Amino acid sequence: MFDIACSRRHFLGLAGGVAAVAGLGLAGCGGTDTATAGSGAAETSTLSGSVTYDGASSFQALVEAAAEQFMNENPDVSITGSGNGSGTGLTAVADGTVNIGNSDVFAETKLEADQAATLVDHEVAVVGMGPVVSMNVTVDDLSLEQLAGIFSGQITNWSEVGGEDAEIHVLNRKAGSGTRATFEAAVFGDDVPDFTGEAELDKSGDVQTQIGSTDNAISYLDFSHFDEESFKAIKVGGVEPTSENVTDNSFPIWATEHMYCQEDADDVTKAFLEYMLSDAVQGSLVEEQGFIPVSQMTVVKDAEGNVTEK
Image 1 (tube, one colour):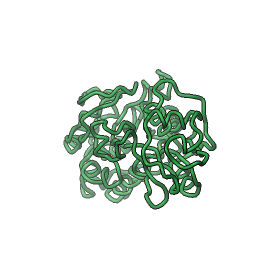
Image 2 (tube, helix red, strand yellow):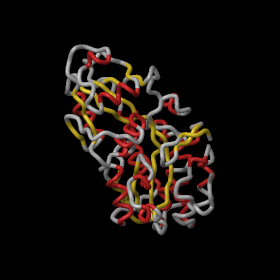
Image 3 (spheres, helix red, strand yellow):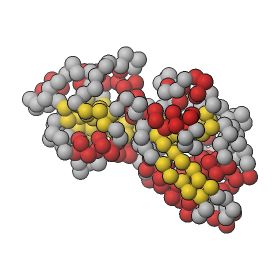
Image 4 (cartoon, one colour):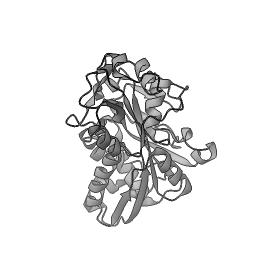
């Protein structure tokens, strides 16, 4: 699927070839001689500049860890950013206020067509997302239909889904969150209800904090934010929320992690995005941070949410 013209959507076909990208450069974000920037400090001592990003909080930790490695190899480079949600990141990179927009969803789903057309997509990882409940909740498995009932406000008591007689406290993410969009697409399809729950939280870290201190609550998080000491991740339709079950779509709630740049991105931005696709990141760091290398997936998902075999 790698296209010399840099399709704005297709980097899923790297399939283990991420290390080879270092010699190619990034078509679309430019193929310059900065492409070897991530291969060793001795080769990159002249690379300098700054990179800014914003977007999905779900994989901010992965981007931060990769940025730290990259800056260690390139001491004259500064990489800084925030995780204010996929919609915010995509708008910011389209407007040119940051160099990179991180997103759990395709740009086409958040931006106008003409804005999305100016961006180049780099698919850097895949992550599973699933429902999480308070430690006191006895339910450990919910079907997609039951999740739809809870997150539409139709099911309001845990006893309705096999639990104790207690009110369900629904903690949602704010509109613009890619995690919310991914969860709702899997649970509701195109018919998403206008339901906010008891709270709409800004970031994945906020969900971690609030569900860890609230009884009888339910929310959803990406796998990299699961914390078995503070809350419980539960099965969906009898399937455990594990990366292995995501790779073939057995576990149905997952997203591709995108890093978007402008077509005329500067050299240091290109070099960092190339580094995200290199073996230095894909070979170990992606899995260490709780994500799945795109090369391990046996299925792909398009902007409309359709899943097909590779």
